[in-house]
Image 1 (cartoon, one colour):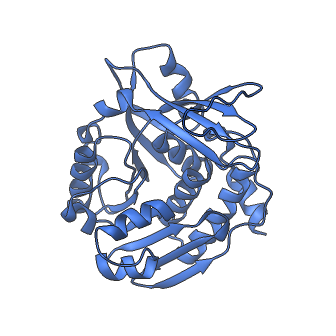
Image 2: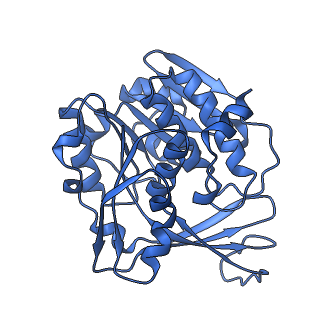
Length: 293
């Protein structure tokens, strides 16, 4: 079972001819509104890959909340631990260019009201994988890491967006996932190169670095891997990192070796990039199987 403690947003997606520069207005043809948030995206990706998923987080008491929760509630995800806070539902403005590159601004809103106590002790144990990100308060994420480790649960953190994490909580992680910018942020605090092998040696935890079109770099106590990205024509990369994280966590939770889990997550993320949007673009398990074969 995977417990996701994280963010829930409503995404406002703007396809544009090019990404805006500071002070520049760029006109686009239309706009889409979709459920999002790193936590929710990763939960949907894991559930569509066949994992049993429990989600804990917060939305507001506003008109945005129901739209933000639509895909979480549409599937098999246990949403009983989602609370309504007296703040606006989190919202993200996402600009996407014709090459699929994006620029994102997020208003955290109700995500700042999320508390680790929404996940009760009875859920935490050796058969549980806890999946976390950095879009809810860091102190709450750190507290859940400590509780999960004490209960014997596996702990996976996506260091997105990059933010400081208490040293003791960082050392308790089984696996940390980061993109290149987030890996550079982490490396700056350790004085080592921003590679998976160097960060693993410095921190003593499993490290996975996603490299976009250049694939993935990973290192754990069991070995090191450098895998290529899926060969695809990208339409929108917005949800790719969350798709990778959710599917990788689902595969690990099922007991797959990390190399196979990395290959599966890479294939799923490639599929995600061929579709528009974030949460709605997460592939089903059968689609990922077909891409692998």
